[in-house]
Image (tube, rainbow, N blue to C red; front, side, top):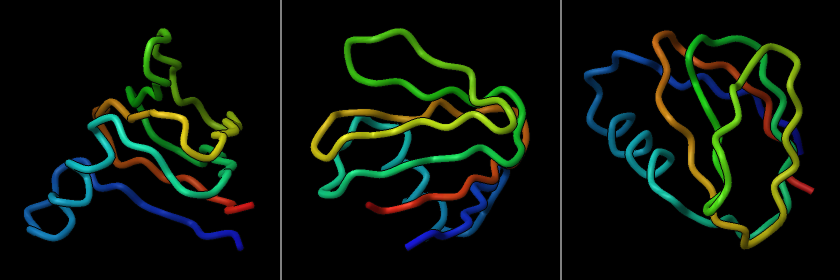
Length: 85
């Protein structure tokens, strides 16, 4: 399954802010995921214990199930596709 997701930089929606908070703290997902960056500026991705990676257009990141990771908020909205494997 592939989904397109928009992470808003300046949202006032409580549910969106709670969801963003969960993404910006280290967490693990139950399934393997492939993330492809569509657009965004200043955002970073980080596996726990590793250096952050700049999220630039067309970058693909493969996230193994149960590997701890987070995103670091940027200066614009972030659009990505997420493929759950």
